[in-house]
Length: 218
Length: 218
Image (cartoon, rainbow over all chains, first blue to last red; front, side, top):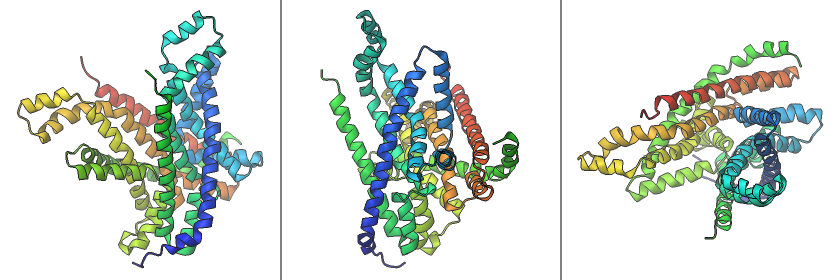
């Protein structure tokens, strides 16, 4: 075995740093869009109109049953080319569509966990349904959602690595290129792994902070 | 897009079906054994074991699977020639380690959810720890483990698609080849998606079947 050469990390650091930003951008955009999509799907699922309930159920069933990689292929080769999106945009679309199905279930479970009495009480007070959701149910549901929401966000962060397959030079894609071009796969891939660990640890810590902030003050 | 082209592509993609299934079954086998060992280590009275298991869990749940696969495929051979695997076994290695980190949590939560009274009762009856784990605790915990265990298994089945990236000729790779050779997108991807949906449905049915078999008969 050749001796390990850690100076390669120093030399490739500017590239690694930029690629880490691409990963973070992909993650942030997909998280926002997936949360919005999941929220709409959750409300559809709880709606009184059976057609909306049905559509939402079907969406979740299909997109949770498919590998994220296949959804990204659809987003890149099919949606992306028809709408002439950039690879980054197709990546965000694919990741959001896939993650939205999981977010929908998490948000729905959170909203359902709010006691029935809360719905009845706010109706008795004459609040409109929109008002009731916004001021009574959602604030209470958020507390229940946090652990699942955040662990799902960690999964999303890790699945941004799939974007390398559709030609986006994010952290995993870059490490793969550098591993081949520098002939130092151990050092490069280990460095990339450490960056991912740092990012996922940040998410775990922020989960704890959020849980504390939203905990019941009794 | 037409149905006939989908029918034409289906047999080509199905050539990779058994490779996908083999990838899945080997990874499921190794990850179950690995996850079980990690769970027992985490519950062990020896602090070093608990600590090692926690670090392994944190490490492999914090890194994207794709990066792990690159590690198994590019970095291990660079460490030592004897660690050069065929793409198929490199994929099984990556998938197994990654899944084991998740399965250990499913197995551990199943074991700790068995009431303390059961352990106390078996100790009162003079059973050794080994005996009551095997005959009293684990059989009861299996019922609780089934949903998260199968949930992880479904994830692993979907993630076998990533093996395409390290050149394992499973279904996703074959579909990807059709896309680049025939310039057809929707047809091969729809054929591929329908096979994956079928596989996830089978696993969900297996979950329901197992839950019925292990249900408490009262």
